[in-house]
Length: 206
Ligand code: SF4
Image 1 (cartoon, helix red, strand yellow):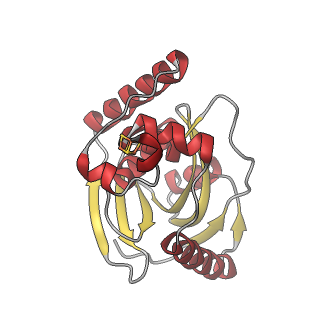
Image 2: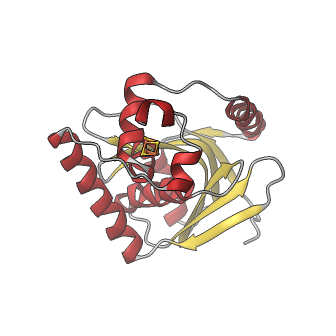
Image 3: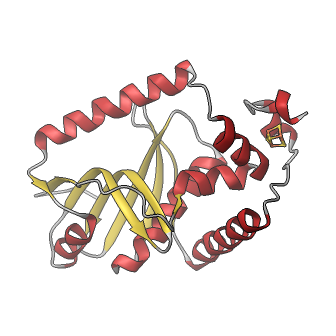
């Protein structure tokens, strides 16, 4: 979709509400509940790829900030879009449907929103993250949501999907499993070879 006249905006940050699940926690939990637990207890050493990715994100955000005309919360931006404006925000804080996160980029049109997550490569974790953002956006009154993953280094689209009812209920059931697991204090191992191979905690786990 080609934008004609666009309002570029940044959002103020309030931080995570106490009762919300962060989108990254939910995605980590989906990949492996035990890995999610280890990450919470031990943290994770930054890899050079993570540092490089963070630098690229910061560069994109600074470019965006320079051209941004307005500072506004997502709710106001959605209202302006519903009234006929087109807006682009980066590093936009979102809190809805019991989920909290910061969206890399959101494009708001009068009848649609596009959520874009910038990643070094495509992964299940990234897909879960973008769908959780879309689930959090629903209570703002946006019905048509597309989620996209774009490669950070060259803006190459890697994946795109219309967020539908099945996706919504998938995120809901994942949230329920998350809460039940935290309440019970049991964090089962996923033990999927592909996941375990690259897990930073595989030595502790075994
Ligand atoms: S090694 Fe595998 S089962 Fe263990 S925490 Fe990592 S991903 Fe989970």
